[in-house]
Image 1 (cartoon, one colour):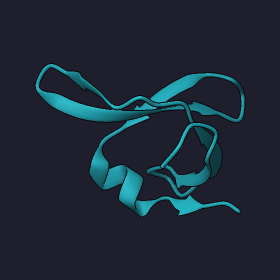
Image 2: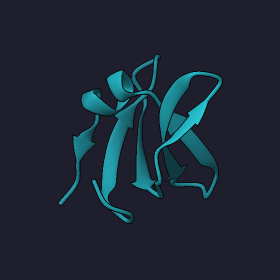
Image 3: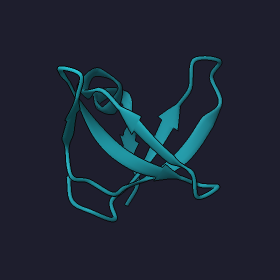
Image 4: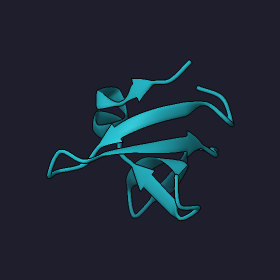
Length: 58
C-alpha cells in the first residue's frame, strides 16, 4: 500500500465509502493502525483486519 492509493470501505451498517491511504502506519496504545482520509476530507484509521476487508480501486 502506498500513499494516495484509493479503497472502498464498507462500514458496519453496509454503507460504502471511498478512502485514500495517507500512511504511515502508526501505533496507538499498543495497536497498529493504517491512516486514511475519507471522501469528505476527514481523517480516519483502521486496524489490519478492517484494511483486509477493503476493496482497492484502480
